Length: 256
Image 1 (cartoon, one colour):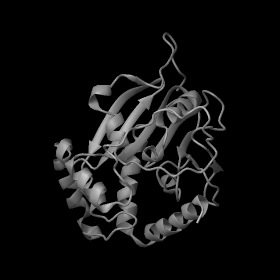
Image 2 (cartoon, helix red, strand yellow):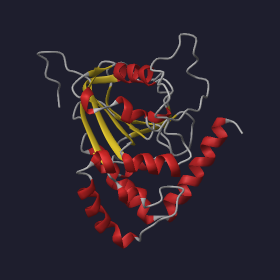
Image 3 (cartoon, one colour):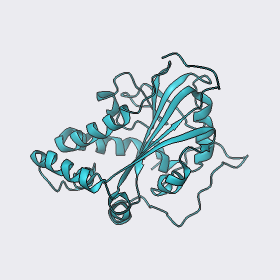
């Protein structure tokens, strides 16, 4: 089975889960709202890279949904390593569960920085490797967390970015975006925020492929528990939101 066939088969499976699990839709709606609150208010479109089944439109209706393979529900096809957008033209990029699939994250970040407008933001939502996150993603998710594996930051010169190349390392965001890195520049983007969430409400929902462990009516109570556990991210974090911003030239105020 080639990668495109596998990609569409997974999308079909995910859509079936989305359609039949109201709790899953509620959980993702709230995670998308967390992202939406961090969007930059600068001219240009908001673009999602790796949109999957395209659910983000329910919260960010004007978002341009893209993926590496075409699908009827997507707005266009994009390769994160070679984007079709003009330099400095995009207000926001959203990567939801995409960063850990980037074999060469530094190369992708350079391309995203090229296309972002000054003051524009890159929002990355990823698995987080708190103790609970390591257990959940390490034992109950088919993709490796790969905490002990090296991260190859930049692609070799001879690498072909158009060749399908599956890669997964769920721990890469936690290793790359650390509290020590705050307000430093990573490939030209300033790391301005990291939020880590327990998201037991997500974990116990079963996600797209697992068994739901609590009823929909219990969601408010589980969210209250989330807010308590959020206070100890080293122990309980399973999700993280990373906010990077393209600096604005000194003395220049972007139009809003």
